[in-house]
Length: 448
Image (tube, rainbow, N blue to C red):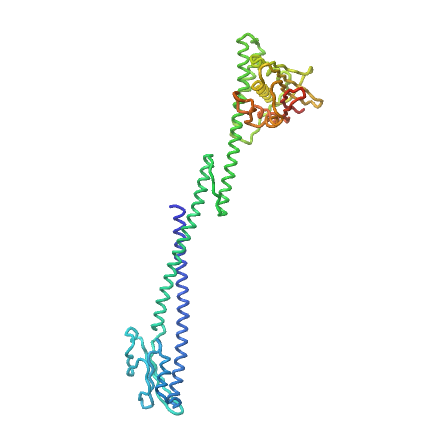
């Protein structure tokens, strides 16, 4: 059963019960008040009739025709007949339905004839005595006026109840339609959030439903952000996986072509790249857990050796494109304490970026410099990668590619990975144009 049908049944039951209870209570109150009024009026009329009859027997009123007119005014549904007798039981005056003593009066509604009782008053005054007989209904509820009033009251209450019910049903249909429409919109929104689809929502004016819609919208936005983060990390994994594979491929091609010697040092380099690839695959669990950060391995190594191996691995590719690749290192050792794999990944991404975008015949120089505090700066400078100042600001944004990236493969994740790796190491990234026109992109490493 739908929510609308359930709500309609519940509201109709409440309305019917309310109408019935209100009708019963109000009709009883009105009926009781009306009966009290009739009874009070009847008692006043009896007192006035007795007083008037006493005046007639006492001789204060001599005109019988006038007396008949006056007494006729007291005839009603309750008082149906009035008779006055003298001391000899002779009838002096009679108005209304008259009957012989001890019998019901004639000339009245047969339905009420058996409900009539006779009241006899013995009147004794200074100037005369006599008897007053009044024919009345046994109870006020037996009155025809009361019966008609009760019938009219019942009919009025019934009609008003039916009218109220119709109005309530019309309003219920309108309100329930609007309410169920808002609920249907909310259900569609929940389905859109579940399926990650776009849904145009009409906000509800009902506070509670609007709160649910707002919560669903917030949830959808959070899920999109979370999904974006997972996608970004998946792209990062895919990008990082190419580094050891590319290095292995380059070295193997060098050995095959006789350019690179196949010795123990080269074999150890390959084993290191395989270990990097194995560690990378073990980090796939981070994609499913947003709370996990990059793993930074603490180990002592020489930056000069790490950078040299990456440059040597990439040298063959640059040579084939006729790009001069050089490495500028300080004369002394450059010891460092953490993130060897991340630093190698950074340099590989920087060189890959330069390889994609600089034209043939350009120069690319990898520069390592140290400072007095024990920190380092690693930069890749090229002569053919022309960028505008506003483009430099967005180089490290994910999925951002330069205007001259047409035709080259990639997702725009390389430099963003450099930024994430550097931040995990506590350093910073930078990109600028030097005075000699060289484009410089690099990162810094903090001292221990």
